[in-house]
Image 1 (cartoon, rainbow, N blue to C red):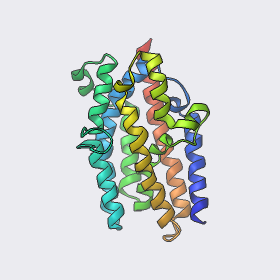
Image 2: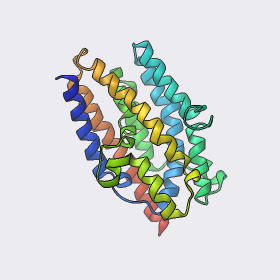
Image 3: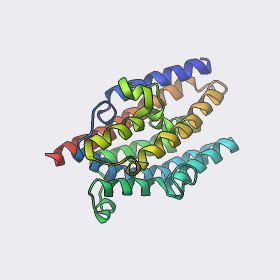
Length: 239
């Protein structure tokens, strides 16, 4: 299977995910938005301080390894390229405060059962697999922020671009209060391009064509469970 066919198959899987996942295919209410902040702050820290670094450990290509570590430092230490020196989890906290949450409540949040199951699934998918499958797990959901997937406006501007346009109308936020989405509109393109480029470069060479396509499908089904759990809990607390 040639690299262009591999990437086409992975793109088709990302497109399905964008059209079916509740938080990509449906709109937010205030409960969903606040639950997203609380859960995704934790998830950002867990994935980038533990799970993605395991992929970097397994990666034999030095340049790719450093790119993975660089992306992780932007998420959990400091992003001088996209977020004015703040880590991405802090940018999520600030978004939650703009939504009326107290900082101490955001930080005291416990993971939902679906979040806990997602972490357990990713631990297997990113720790005990070939590093190319781990690269796919690192970046497949970030791919949703690249235009070209899903329906309507999302296909034009990506998922974060959609939220930047809708959240001012939904929640009365100003564009400068939506830094999280502007950061990820740019950073996730760069991060996901790393994964897609690495797959295109190494999958055929390592005879991993079917494995990386399968990894994309399985990981996005885990992401769908994770985000659907946030949507369901958000609807519950929203009343």
